[in-house]
Length: 247
Length: 115
Image (cartoon, rainbow over the protein chains, first blue to last red):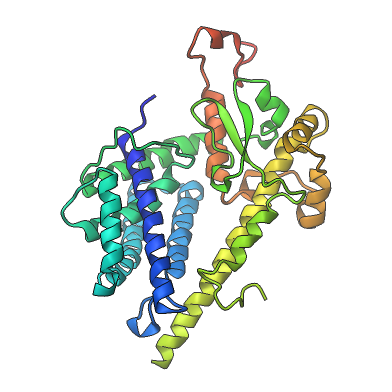
C-alpha cells in the first residue's frame, strides 16, 4: 500500500528536525551553558521544544475529548499554528547569525543529500519543523522511507494535513470512541490468536506501532523494572547541565 | 535585564518539569500497556515470559509503583500519550481483512463466527 505523500514528507521533516537539534547542540558547545544568552531574549531549544510538544498534546486532547465540530477545530488549529509558528521563528532567528554559518552550510549539504531543493532555505526549514511536529501527532506510528519522496508547496501540505486531521477527528475518533474500546482485547494471547504478531523493540517511540508486516512493536529495555532505562533522559545535558533536576 | 533573566530561569525550570513529567507519564503508560498485554494469567503470561526471557510479575510491579491504580482495570483515559496509538491499533484489528489466498484461512479479530 502506498503511503500518502504527506507521510513521506513528515518523515523527511522529522529528520531535518533532528538535524536542527544537532545544530543547537553544536552551538551549545560553542556558547557555553545556554544556547543563546538571555540578552538575546531567546529561550533554549529544550524550552521551545517542550512548549511545542505540550501544545500539540493540548491540541490532540482537545480533538479527542471535546467533540468540537469542524469549524471550531479549524479555529483551534489556526490559533495553535500561529503560536507554534512564533516559537519556530525564534528558533530560525537564532540560526541566522554569521556564527552559525558553518552549521547552516552543513545543514544545506545534508539537505541536498536528501534530494531536496528550495530557494528560501531557512524560512521553509523552520516551517517544516513545525509541520512535521503537527503531522506526526496527527497520525501516530508512521513508518516511511525516503523513496518516492514528494514535496508539495508548504501551504498545500498544511492544508492536506489539516484535511486529514479534520476527517480523523470527526469520523474516525468519534467512531472509535463510540465503539467502546475494550482494553481487555489488548492481550497478548488474543492478539496472537489473530493475524498480528508481537515483536520486541528497543526504540521507545515505536511502542505499540503496527508495522506493514503485521507486527506490533513492544518496547522492552531488558530490565526487571520496565522502562527504567528512560530515567537517563531526566538528567539529559541539554536541559540539565547544572544537574539541578537530578539532585 | 533582571526580569529577562528571571523569565529565562523560569523557562528553564518549566522545561525541566515538563520533561520530567513526560518521562513519568511514559513510564507509567509503558508499564500499564505491558501489564495489559502480558499481565493476565495463562497464555498471555507465558507469552510474556518467553518474550522477556525472564519472569516479571507485572501486576506486583504495578501495585508497587502505582498503588493508586492497583485496584482498577486500566482505562483508555489512563493513556494520555499512547491513546492515539491504542485507538489506531484497535481500528486496524477491527478492520483487518485477508489480502492473500493464504490469509483467507486466518481468522480476523472481529466477526469470528462469520468467518
